[in-house]
Image (cartoon, rainbow, N blue to C red; front, side, top):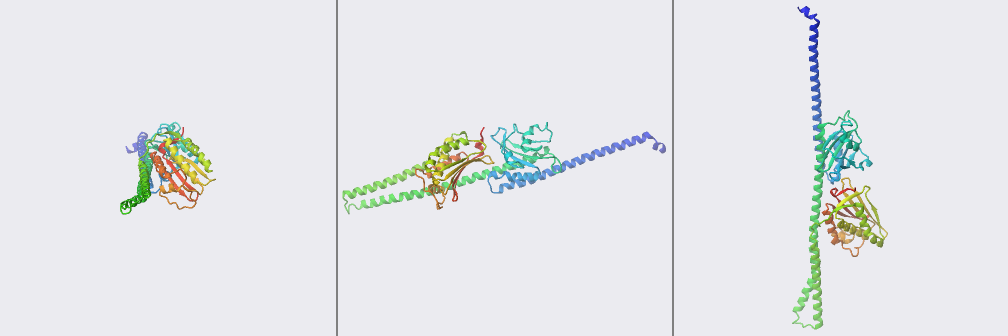
Length: 451
């Protein structure tokens, strides 16, 4: 029986089919296990990458620097951990327009960074696989990085986006997939957290500086008021003592009239001091009320230059103007900004030596803020009254005398409040080698490319 079963072809075929199925099942199970192992390995690797990236990125908050200094180091951390070929941080301006500008990038040329990208209805997350039809919604991101494989994250509330890309999907450049959402969104979230932290620190520093300046100004005002009242009050007291001695030493009409005139002069001096104090007290430091509208940066600066031009001709000082290559607009109170710019330019002109020049420039920073600089390009410096109102020393050589008919002690604090009411800053530096520099910064929130 055994001999017959051995030589039975049908039986052998059945046994062969059975063992073939078993081998196929074992092979399929082995493949599934290998795929599961590969998936687990990728997940573990991705988790380690995310943890390392977030840990290193959060350390950026402890480094001194402005908010615009965070983007570059952040991209370096992303590229090192994600092992990608290119990366870029983008900002939507204005919000909801679908128009993105590149604020920081690694692997892109300067010319490419200056170009804006139109990404209508941008998704919060996406990745490309190299399939032209499937990747159609991500075509603008592919065009930005000039790479076929991209990974994208976008925060609509902040108007900020992060995109990374690879040239190929081989070796260390593994394909992007849905599981990478945690990586790209985590990196963008950390960047925004650090950015907000830096902006909050900058605002706190400005608030502290304003409080210190207000306290110093109050102390200086009280001291000056006391000094101004000292002489006329002493005179009044002296006259009163003389009047009490009239019975002991009668006065003639001329001496009496002289005493009355001195007393009247002292009273007028006291009244003048009180009037000045009342005038200064009206400026209580409250933010001015703004009537804002969008206006071109070029138009606002050229209008101020035209207003100052007669003064520059009379003082024989040339105004050199440098405007942004990409036309921009700002949402400001045009009248108040015009007055601030005009006064700063007039002070710079009068602080310059005859035959010198001042430089007026405007530039968009990578974080979208607009910076306007007014620099006196000569050995002349700011007037002494400006320096004293800012608490700066006035012992530098070559200092120009205070200009006539100009009192910066009164208008400069108000000018600073106008700029701060727009969310900006006004800083004035004393530069012994080249002159004075007034730096006016308006935030990205009220700045956009001109349509």
